[in-house]
Image (cartoon, rainbow, N blue to C red):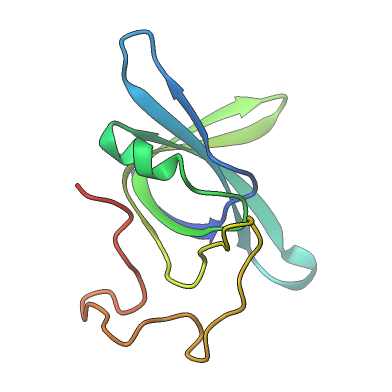
Length: 130
């Protein structure tokens, strides 16, 4: 099994649906830039979040910053690689939340980060209860 961790800003709102068996799944699209200058390219990852975590992921919106860890599978469509991650864990970063009207709020003086952070990962918060 290949585990991969990516970070990026969602390119569109989360898409939540239910399977015929009643399971909940949320699909996220996360572009990840690689390289720099003329050699910079963007890889697009389709992230699927299942179960209880899918309910929280369904609230994510375009522009929210997310870190995802999960199993990577690579396919091909029209000669282009298709990257898909089945998320085993994801976290959103403080400061990427939106205002009630859907607009992005101004960052706090401390860059949007709280002073009472967990020492193990100093810049992330839990993405949901699991």
